[in-house]
Image 1 (cartoon, rainbow, N blue to C red):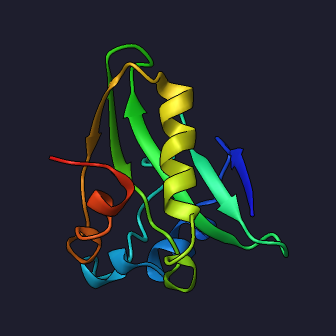
Image 2: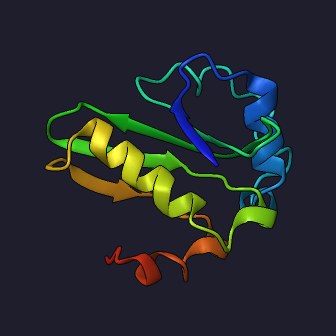
Image 3: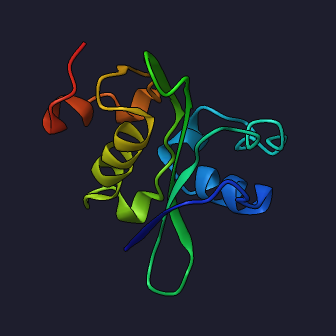
Length: 120
């Protein structure tokens, strides 16, 4: 897996990974109108060996006090791997480890986060 900051992520790639994630269960159109969402200060992606995007972390952060992770879609085929954990660690490092971490969850993913040490 390759993790990188991609501030120029294509909207089609973002929509495709959202449609292949548990997020699709809560979004009628998987977020097809997302260009404004991609005008973010930080976007971290995960790509597999062939370059296909399998996960995205899109936080809103001031890089000092707060970081709200509002999008974290991961392709269902990659959800039992470390992709989500690595994306979270990457955005936490880049936004500042001392920032207050706020995570908005898709209902289907709620049981995962206590497993990696994230608590209410």
